[in-house]
Image (cartoon, rainbow, N blue to C red; front, side, top):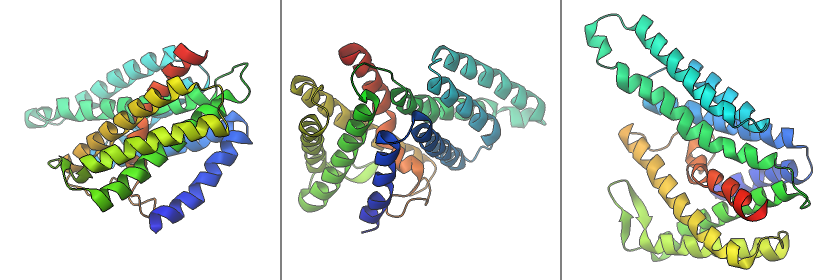
Length: 268
């Protein structure tokens, strides 16, 4: 029930920000979610360094918003240098230096994993196209496919699930749930085509939905792997029934770049 209530609260906000507001409003909401997700990642890692990582993430998201994707590399380069300087001047003895490589790598990886991948959500929102409201259509497709796949996988797995998909990482996931989720992904993409996105060809919608569903499961499993490494059940407790922001972003992070480059190849 908590999952349903959370969806009832958040989905109308997303729809309003997408279809009735300027790109800055949705981008601000997305940026807040991504930064909170990154903060949860750093809390899982228990290595500190949130300040430089969050500042680099904010700069990365700003680069995506202003269409300066080239500056993302510059931000990451600056973060690497700053993090190494932090390690250089805060390590007190030889024993501390043994933790330098994993500590620095954790900081940089967090920005790459959460902010760079998640930044493509903002990049999609600021797309300018002769197709009316293309960015809103793409992101509505994005959320519809992801949410429908997650919901179908959850209830199919609970009802019919027998064969474990990845028991070492996520014991609750089943092959039956995976199949149900993929069916949900395809159905959602077809609904989007007939409901609000006629420019999306069915010949593109079905394979796109299948790839999105597969990447969503992989993203979910990868985030579960991170939580297992941190010995945590959830990344946070911000969203009732869902855990933290990172727990909701997991299936989106791998799909945001996919959808952006799908636009560049097939709809530009």
